[in-house]
Image (cartoon, rainbow, N blue to C red; front, top):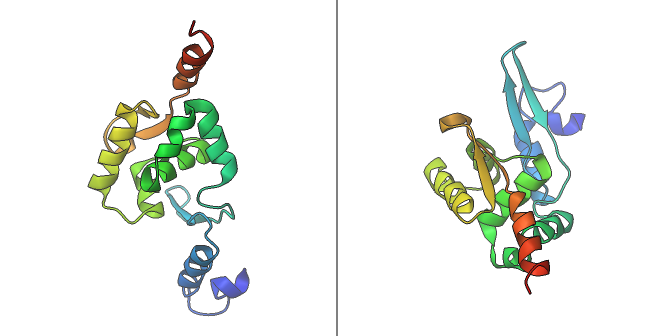
Length: 145
């Protein structure tokens, strides 16, 4: 890890190597948090796949087989919400190569389709999996008679 960080070299010179190593391994992009007090930058290095089968299985158990028709950015947004507990526009900007306006529309569409639930407003909006859909799915499958 110190080799990747460039320990003993110019400050920050290893960040590009870290990002490239994570991308090459197809792991989730590192999460960079800026903490105001005390002034600190935190780099969270997750060694999880971008779309792990465990998360996809969880999404199928919550939303049913219809989730398999989603692909690309929508699936990344949902797996991020499942793995990290929530997802935000800022977090998706770190994971996918889209403008914040496009990501906002993606998140809005996922909310309208019943996959996500928004919490807060504006720049502080975070999205959680709509676990109420799990109950609706249960009723649709088992109480259908």
